[in-house]
Image 1 (cartoon, rainbow, N blue to C red):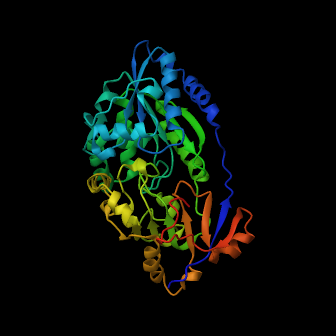
Image 2 (image 1 turned 30 degrees about the vertical axis):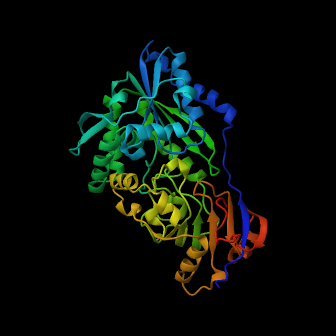
Length: 422
């Protein structure tokens, strides 16, 4: 019988600001008011407000606060799902996704207009069509709302944020497909700037609302951005997002257990910036950290609706992950994003014990009791981490870590499974 490592629990200390929930409506109002949008928006004009597929903290409250600002100006706002191919590439699926985050007509006080139809605005300089959501294109104005953070596949001074939302989100499935193809020929930086330039010039974008979260998955900053400032402000917000981003407590691991992956957690299911697989599905690059030998995925989130994008970056998973996986939706998303291997299923086993028994012999000469193991709920929730005894000495010496539970056996039940939540 395999001997497993003992585990202890640590709490990480992150230096991150937080915007209190009760301050969010006033902050959104103050930021949008700062841009004096009433000078451009006339009574009765329509404003399309984007809503993406990510599980952004307080996104329903932020969206409702934006809606209320435009209603005060006498405008008629409505919400547009803006998420490329997510939700199975259907209008119904995309509406269901945002409603799952609380972004509903009843809560936000305005209509939701979901469609996969686009308008071809023009041809980009690189020779491909620029697509834009038909409802947003038909509006008098567009407010682009999105979280700014490091992208899971691309590196640059502009990564995931407002400019990407104008491309992939508002470009819907057709736009997302052609933009990812163009990125393969050019670069993310070139294509995001090329398309954003056309969208800002031709699609009546009145402002952006950038959101940055801290390492605890909390709202840290909300900033309204004028159209001419999109690139400059997004660069600044990305720097903050990188500074505040969560990370695992140790630089190397033999095994990483993730309770859940899903599109609400990250565009790649698991955040590659956290697990160290941004450039290669199964091996960290030389200067990339952490370096993890094996990733084990235990479940999908309910909010991902069967989209198991990113499962291909894990070596092992529970069989229930494969059973919950909507293969069609997952493949559509991964093919659209130009990352087909992210949809490939890893080795699956019915229980956690079977996975551990299969995975531990693959880590090298390290005996199982001495294996370096970390266990977290998701890549969004790493403030508290279960760690194997191999890390105990280092943890005791570090001032940024507090040991909150002493070493003990892995809590496997009689069926050979760990608790669903770490």
